[in-house]
Length: 109
Image 1 (cartoon, rainbow, N blue to C red):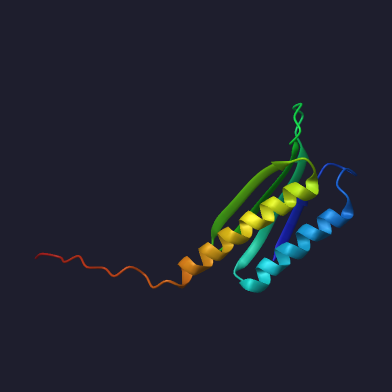
Image 2: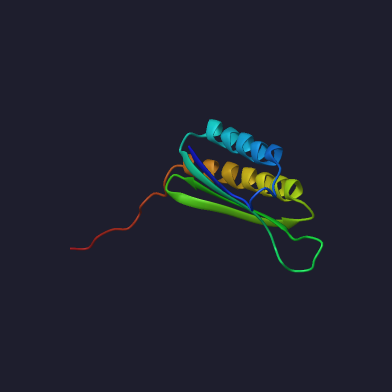
């Protein structure tokens, strides 16, 4: 799995980046069809209490799952995103294991 992480220079502590990477690898161990992840950690320039942003986009079975959250700090934003993304991955994997819909149409000649 390819993981790309984009952060402001020297603003995000290394332990947060490692936390995100470790959690993304856990997703990969659940299903190795997760081929890539793009992580964006940034700070919004608006005066607000929740101005730290974490966005994660996962590529799984050729589709993209994306979650975006704002919080009071990078770690809290990352935790919220990873929690929501975990639910989305589980839901997606359940749908993947369901049998395809039966085709019931008929063709008239």
